[in-house]
Image (cartoon, rainbow, N blue to C red; front, side):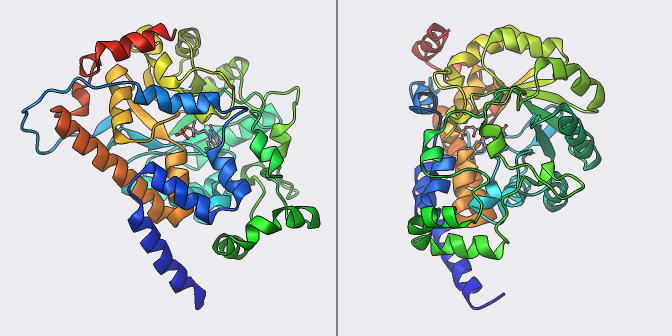
Amino acid sequence: MNAVTPALERMRARRVAKILSYEDARKGARRILPRGLFDYVDGGAEDEVTMRRNVQAFQDITFRPRMAVMNPEPKLATTVLGTPISMPVLTAPCGGMRLVHPEGDIGVAKASAKAGTIHVTSSASCFSLEEIAAGSTGGPKWFQLYRFFSGELMENLVIRAQAAGYEALVVTVDTVVAGNREKDYKNGFSYNMRVNAKNAVKMAPQMGIRPEWVYRFVRDGMPFALSNTLSPDGQAMLLTAMTRLATESQSPSWADMAWLRANWKGPLIIKGLLTSEDARRAVDVGAEGIVVSNHGGRQLENAPATIDVLPEIVDAVGGQTEILLDSGVRRGGDVLKALAIGAKAVLIGRNAAFGLAVGGQAGVDRMLSIIRADMVRTMRLMGLENVADLDRSWLTQQSIDRAMAAR
Ligand SMILES: Cc1cc2nc3c(=O)[nH]c(=O)nc-3n(C[C@H](O)[C@H](O)[C@H](O)COP(=O)(O)O)c2cc1C
């Protein structure tokens, strides 16, 4: 430790204590991160229509509360695929988190374990999957899979994840190619934004006014490579390769599922589905779970809001597989809305990422405790004793009709 570090730690604690909501964390992250990095986390594909719709669709749903109920301690605990969790909120796989803060995915995993929930480790991380497993302090851990540039690399990741003790495999299928996030191109940001003369000149104006981030990043050794793709000769894939229109899919395809089902000894979850047809297909290939997700509006522009397609999917396969949802969850009330329609739990992406930017693990701790407190308060105001009691009778008919009409 040097003279600068204790001062930074005090600043971090003060900043974290001031966060009261998602918007506070987002604003805090905007002040700390270089613009290119903030936009990388915050932005969505093309005109960001799907990204905005995710949030709007949650806001359009209203509750049917039951008044005058004594309800001192609402129960939030549940299980997902047999794993008990203290509340129905998991932290989503997000690539590049070590650029956001040096504690990166390990900070998010530790915060999730402390909150009694599951972290899903991204395969596009700048820490290796083994480092995250070792650093994640014993909480339940799932591994998210990309295919990257070959089936061989994908299979190798599966074998490593099993050996490292990950309990479930989350197969992301919505990233055949990377979505068109124009801000990333305009900012010159990509995962392989290497420190070279060209990038240094381009980024200098934003870096100069983000000294704390620069200080931490340089001390962390400026990690850019995707550790999981490191080959024995020391070469790692740089994620700009993902942004190219390659012939090979970056996501596993249905053709890969038979191998994955046969070789993964544990629950298999398919992430990124938006229709009842695909949900049925997931059941047919033996997936124990699915994540209804549009990748936070970062992939297919004009994909529907996830909460709008949830009724269709629950009605099709609700009894046959566990259904999780992400994209647009900002407050505890959103979690309750997804559960009322039939999701078992939700995942949060940017919510945790912005907390991480503001305060490392402590920032993620804060975001998880805010969402928990939101849920407790909302449940008390609704007269709801247990998340297990949620069903569509807790939402107005108008809200459900609207979602059904979105089919
Ligand atoms: C910066 C960032 C990186 C992401 N990287 C991945 C990834 O590597 N793998 C993946 O399956 N999803 C990835 N996602 C998508 C998230 O897992 C999740 O689906 C999405 O963030 C949920 O939307 P929300 O941010 O509105 O909560 C990423 C999302 C963000 C914001």
